[in-house]
Length: 424
Image 1: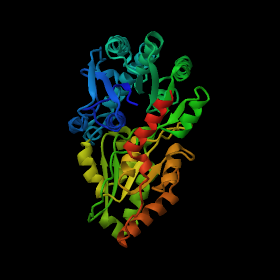
Image 2 (image 1 turned 30 degrees about the horizontal axis):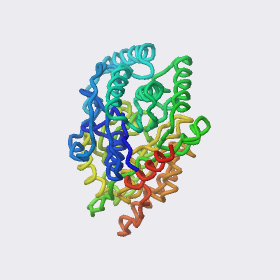
Image 3 (image 1 turned 90 degrees about the vertical axis):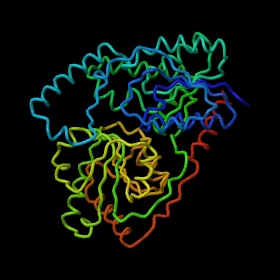
Image 4 (image 1 turned 60 degrees about the vertical axis):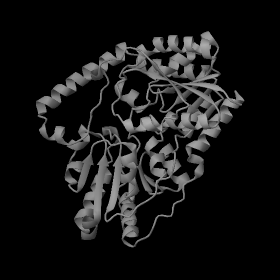
């Protein structure tokens, strides 16, 4: 049965990156299932990356609404990643020290005045806009997607005041999100995040997560908690390439730095002439300044860094690669994330190398899909053996015959979302 479904999301085309893909794809697929989809997003947002090509992917049947709201200056949204090495090569120690002092000052401002996040000033205008919109259109459901998790406040208030059935979608964890652990230093702030997270989960008519472990955690609070993986739209067809290409895409933060991988690749280049001749190491996206400064990364000369590119162009790079790298975060206990890029990789059928803590959701899904192998951050030898095995297979002309499970297609995931909505 057709439903009127509202979707409140900060990230919407022309925003780039993996975060925007989730509800862009699901919205398109839910329309195909016969639902009336009303998207709510924002005017003049501060997107860290832009991919205007994604505007072409919006189904014409979607009703997209833009809410006016106050956006904080970009300097409060800290980003230490750079698209190239130029900053690392030209910055003096004075620049670095000053940047450190300024960054810590901004962190204190954020923690004291911007709870739960810097998008808090979008809450009130969103409530007002959607409430007025609902009076005219009578929405059956509202889905709020975070981060920013401040958007869940909107769903909570509209459920209470207007009686809209509300689904909260956690693309990332909240209280256990590594960004919050790094940004918030006070125990009182961390406690506030946890209390509000529990309140949001408990108040929701249903909760969606992107990992099984986060679903299990939330299920103790709300029995209507479900793992909805981000999935992918279609398969990427492989193409031959004259190099053994190892590819990383997206932002790479210092807390994700796979130091053993850089050392493995450096050692293989130094000890095997054929590997040195054929290997091609490419990183596409924003690489954290601190990573560029580490000796492990500096020692790896045979690599290339390319600025962020559109999904369309990125697909061309993935299809000629042999090994795709995805990293979780190197923080104990922060293992309940499956990066969206994993599913983008999965759609290619190429070998995936995960770097994560043992027992992480990333490791488990790599094992489940038989898409590659996952290694802990300190595992040098096993990682080296696997990379070299992939190289040997490449030299021998062995084709990766990995078949991708269709359950991760967006069209099939949308059916699961439809079933959840029908039950409510």
